Every structure is written in C-alpha cells, then in structure tokens.
Image 1 (cartoon, rainbow, N blue to C red):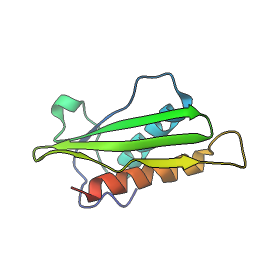
Image 2: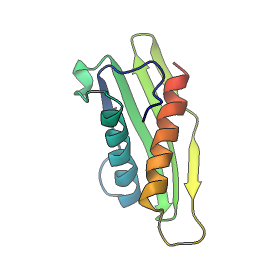
Image 3: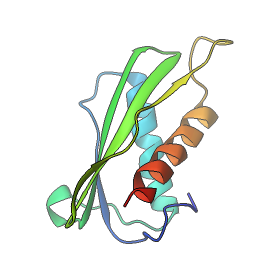
Image 4: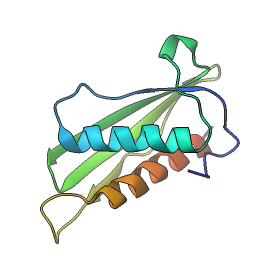
Length: 111
C-alpha cells in the first residue's frame, strides 16, 4: 500500500480470534499491505503504532470492519466500512486486498 500517509515505522496489528475465513483473509491482506508499504510488524508491546481490526462476517459474501488506531496520542476509531458482493458466493481475494488498503488509508489518515 503506497498510501499509509506519512507512516513507515513499526506497527502492531491485532486481529479477531481465528474462526471466520473472511475475517482471516482480510487480516492477512492487512499484514501484506503493511509489509509492502515498509511497516515492520512488531508485537503490540513493542510497537509505537498499534492497529486493531474489528471485523465480522456473518456470510462469506459480506464483511464489515474497522481499524482502531492506538499510539502515544491516544485511541482513534476508523469508520466502519462494509464490503459485499452479489454476483458470487464469496468475496474475491482482489476485493479483500482493496478493502484492506481502504481500511488502512482511512484509519491512518485520521491520525
């Protein structure tokens, strides 16, 4: 993701407990996007910037998520964003990656 505004430092990403395939896919996409944009991933205790994914997917064709951003200045909630598809049974990987970029851009731009 070339768009994490002004942030290339270490970050921690916390995702919901395993058990939902769509949420796990978006978490993996967030990790990939952070790595590709030069953000080293650290444990939460060691990272100056902490991201927490809040996500739910009741069905494999619908996802609702937001990122919570925590750093020295406090805690900031990103907007909740929903992704759904109507023409297939599951959300395609490419759309999940775009969704991850959107979540990151929206959450980090509020910092």
